[in-house]
Image (cartoon, rainbow, N blue to C red):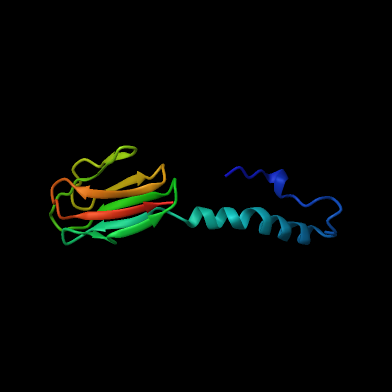
Length: 125
């Protein structure tokens, strides 16, 4: 994240006269943004009913998408094959989870190598 503790400390002349005020300022400036960022996990896409849910997704460059096989006893095989970006989950057993990080901007289609009618459209900004 690039945060350093010294970057978050108030300047000596910031007018904070008590330890309590300094602690509150430090929490607001440093800890709260870190806690909010830590709570943000991967975006979840399920495979259920021989479909990706949701079927369309917008993410930011560097975001993680977790693809979960939640389709009973079916095996899936998610992949992306484009000129600039590729991903292949391999065979996904029921209950398995696979993470994919979209490292570049663009529009990508995630397909299932076993069920060709499954499409997940991902817009990476």
